[in-house]
Image (cartoon, rainbow, N blue to C red):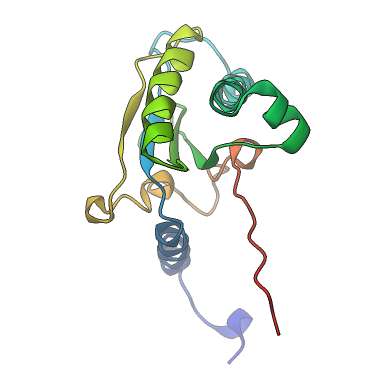
Length: 168
């Protein structure tokens, strides 16, 4: 049977998508999970908020890996960033998962992220916690996803190192 001929409901498509993304993300073993919130009286539109996310991650990268390493070698923190409108579709914010190279870097990332986010206008305090397998938050970034929504992975802020495997 062809997929086009099947009678898969929208609910089933969304459920399968969320499960697939959560499963893949679980395999990435991200160390930290965080939420980037703006104040309720914030008058920034979507585009301006997205610029804030980009500014945040660029600054964090430069402070963790040094500006030269970011510019010259594109050395960045591995991360997935999800933009979400919230349950009532009226509170744009972002969730992220990221990975540290070691424990020392993880602590530095937490401190730097708090410092950078609080200096940006209209922000609430950063919420960041360790991400463990038992927390079961792998699909959290897409929990409000709907097929007709533009809410999704915010690729402009995501970064994953690619690892080439030898094939014989």
